[in-house]
Length: 345
Ligand code: DP6
Image 1 (cartoon, rainbow, N blue to C red):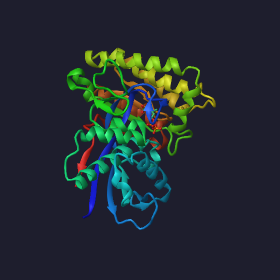
Image 2 (image 1 turned 120 degrees about the horizontal axis):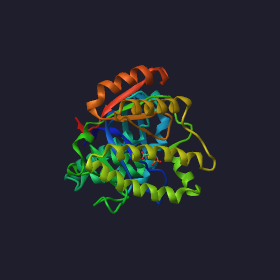
Image 3 (image 1 turned 30 degrees about the horizontal axis):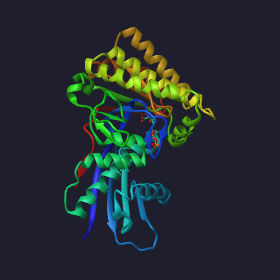
Image 4 (image 1 turned 180 degrees about the vertical axis):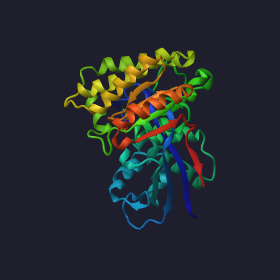
């Protein structure tokens, strides 16, 4: 019997940021994100007959090329999920994966990659067991979290939260949940994310290292309290359609994330001069026009500009003239909010 599964899974952009961990891949504070429609990973996993006595036997193909350097990360993931997917030790696991965005774009592929991989393993488990997994997406989200925290939010479309919070019923540190659409003012679902690529390639400091530095950051406790407050405020803003509050929380979160990096030991700065120039130009444009572009940043130099669909024409004109010249080779990705992963044949 040949077992294989293929899934496509998207990236996401956090509005309230996950930065800091506890236990085994549990978040120090809750977070919330928009699922993106662009920036996806397409992964096929096939099980083949094992050739060696090793615990795990893995082959990884990335964009069609065998990548032995990616095997360690996949083996670590299979190890962490060994109780969830017991079959992975019995076979050679072949992972064939492609991204819809260039590797050089500096867009992290861990969220889309780990969520796609988890979905493939959940589907294969169903084939082996011969029955449907209860709470399929919840299991995939739980597993994806063990690969990369932010990946657990990519399992659902729309707006997704991860981490226990009193005002988010059913929320958990172990897996993500989608916000009920009745809890969100409709216009937010038509938001666009223009990702302005300031820096290409690998990040100077990995997220994993950045998270670990929070353990000794003197502002960590205050940060976790602020994130919890911001979750509640953002929930209200999303429900009421309060764009002013949405802007304030989302931008404050990005600033705080980078302030945490600057106050870690060792401290570091991931923003580049062009990052700051883009932010300043967007803020000046917002003041001048009264329109609603909102800035957020990941753990990197690239800028995400979120804005409502109705303002698209004017904002994209502004971006073309004033922001793209500041980007590396004028690179950008423009994404809608997406509906989440898709199973492929
Ligand atoms: C700044 O999920 O990449 O993007 O769990 O170590 O894989 P690991 O970290 P990762 O961290 C993402 C951090 C962030 C904020 C966010 O997405 O919430």
